[in-house]
Image 1: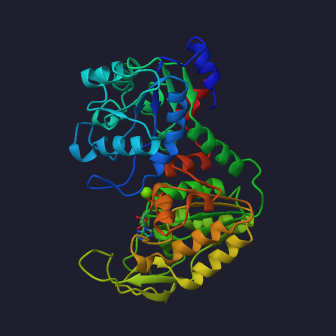
Image 2: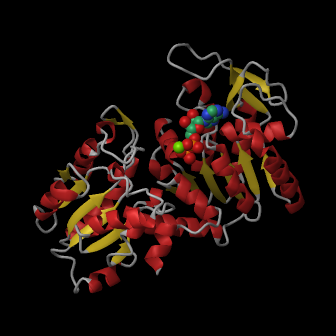
Image 3: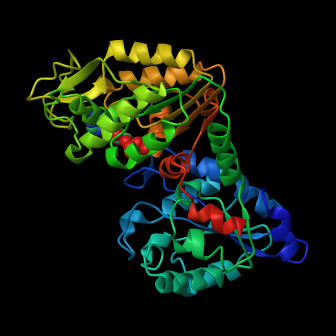
Length: 404
Ligand code: ADP
Ligand code: MG
C-alpha cells in the first residue's frame, strides 16, 4: 500500500490495535435496498482486509448518493455494510451515525482486526460544505475516531470534502491500494501512452466531459464520440438533432475542438448513423427504435444510440489502437434496444492489444450488465469524474493532500 510504511512508522511501528479510518467509495447503485452492482464494494475490499489483517481496528467511512446534508433512510449504508461483510467474509459492524455517540460506541467496541462501517458521511452538512471552517469542524469529529487515515475512495479524490481532504490534514495518512492502482493506470495514460492512443467518450454529462477533450487533443491520436455528447457536435456542424440531448451554449466550444483537432492531426470520429425513437424510453411504452443517417435525424425524434455502421467503424478503429480509455456509454444501454453501440465498443476494448481502461460509474455498470467480466479489460476505474479530471490535467485535492 503506497505510504503505508510511513503511516505505520508514524503510529509507532505497528498498525496493531490502531484505529484506522479508511475513506472508501461504496457508492453503489441501489434498487430499493438491493445492490444492483457491487463493483465498488469488491474494489474497496482488499485495502480494508489488508488493514484488518495487520491488526488495525478498521473504521470505514463512505457516502451513498446525494442526501441533502441530513439523515435520509433512502440513502442508508446499512445494505452496503451487509454486502461488504459478505464480500470480505468477515463481520462488519454498522454505526447508525457517522460521528457522535453511535459512532464512538461502535469504534470502541472494535477489537484488533475488526471492521466497522459508519453511516453515510453525507448525512452531515459539513462533509460537502464549501466553508473551510464548517468542513474542518466535521473533519475534527471524524479524526477523533481514529489514529490514522487511509484514502481509498478514488471516486471522490477530485472533491475537496471533509472525509477526503480535511481529515487527511489531521491524521497520519497513506494512500490505499485502490487509489494507488487507479493513479498508476492514469499515469500510464498520460505519460507516454503506447500509440495509437484512442479515447472514447459518451454518456449524458455533456458539459462535464467536454473539458477533457481540450487536454486530450494534445495527447490522444483518435477521439471517438458517442452517447448524449455527440448531438452537440453534430449540431455544431449545422445538422438537425431533433429532440436529442443538446448543450446549445457549447456549440462554439465543439466547433473549436473540431478545428483544432484538424490542425493537430487528431481524428475526431463521430457516428454516421444513429438509433432514434420518438420518446426517451420509459416503462410505459415499448421502444420503437429506428436507424437513420446522422445528417437525417427527424425533428420529432431523439438519438438514443450510435447506429450499427458507426458501432462497426468505432470497433475497427479501436482494433488498431494500443491504448484505449473509454468513459461514457454510447447510448441508453439500460434498454436493450439502445445498447448495441455500447456493446460493440465494450467488445472492441476486450480485444485491444495493449492497455484498455473503462472509467465511469455507468460505463463500468454497463459492461457488467452486458455480460463482460472485469478481467476482460486492462482496468475498470471506479471513478468517472476523478479519472476525467486527472486526464484534464487538473489537480486532485484528495491526492495532493496525501503528497504534502
Ligand atoms: P459515466 O457514469 O460512465 O461517467 P454518464 O453518467 O455520463 O456516464 O452517462 C451515463 C448515462 O448516459 C446512461 O444512463 C445512459 O443511459 C446515458 N446516455 C447515453 N447516451 C445517451 C443519449 N444519446 N441520450 C441520453 N442519455 C444517454
Ligand atoms: Mg454516471
